Every structure is written in C-alpha cells, then in structure tokens.
Amino acid sequence: MLLILPCNRCVRYGDYSLCPNWRIVLQSIGDLVGAGLVSLAAIDTCKPGIVLWGEEEGLRWCDKYPSSEFYYKREPWMLPILKQAVLRDVRELATLYRSIVYYVNVKAYREALRNAEEALGSPPIFNAGPPQANPLSYRSRRNRGKLRRLLIHLSADAMGKGG
Image 1 (cartoon, rainbow, N blue to C red):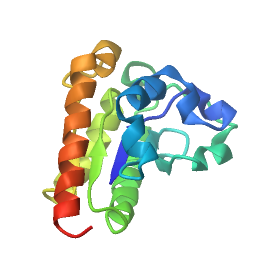
Image 2 (cartoon, rainbow, N blue to C red; image 1 turned 120 degrees about the horizontal axis):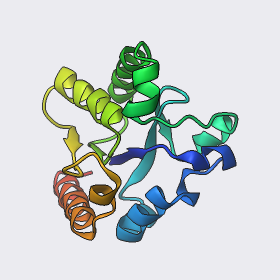
Image 3 (cartoon, rainbow, N blue to C red; image 1 turned 180 degrees about the vertical axis):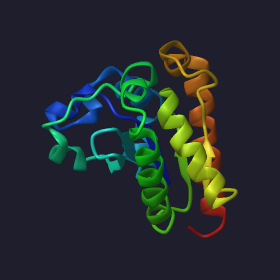
C-alpha cells in the first residue's frame, strides 16, 4: 500500500525523511515500511502532485511553503492545478497499489486528496487523518497510533486476499 504524507523543506536536501514531519511518522510505522508493507510518497506543491519517496531528489531546487494561509491564498490559481495533478497521479498510483492512505495536515493537500477520493469513489483511498489540519494533531501519539492500526488492518486484509 502507499502512504501519502505532506512534503517538507527537506526536499532541498533530496530526502523528505530528513525532516521532523516524516521522522515522527516513521517512528510509528518505520517497521511497516522496512518490511515492504508500506511505500511512502509526498503530496508536493513543487511538482505539483504526488512524489514517490526517493524521487524528491529531482526537486532539490524547490522549497515552497504549502500553507493555505500563505501560498494558496496568495496564489489561488494553484489550488485547481494541484487538485487536477493529484487526481491524475492518484488514478495512476491506484493501478500500482492495492490501497492508498493519506495522512496530511495541510488544508490544501487535504482538499486535493479528498477531491481525488470523491472522484474515484470508495477505497482504495483512505483518509487516515489527522482529525485537525494542524501540526499538533499531526504529531499526536494517539493519531499516529490510529494511522499505524489502519495500515496494519489494511495490510492484513491485503494478505488475506492473496496480495
């Protein structure tokens, strides 16, 4: 399965996992990633769209802050572009992954992923939270625990269905 997290400023170093917002999630699910049950990707303003982990090396030039309050209010024409790009990417990725889960705290990213979820219907896309679009909710041990349980549940379902 694929887990989509928000991009971060470590794109400039060519590795999203160097920044705290990915490291904290990896503390909770790193074993699932290491076991090959979960692949990671980012929803990114730089591309715009979904970037698989490892492909961010090509975005080193970019360092945009995706906050709805800053970027998407100043550049409102970018949100429809992001939505269209995410829908295109999720459609393609849905052919490669049994399920796609997203755990993002950026309002514009949540909106773009929710749009893709609605356009494609029910699963394979799952909104794993966090409940509020803010850093505290994202970092919450409780919310990361819910994310972990969902990923384990979906992995068990996939194993039970022969894949």
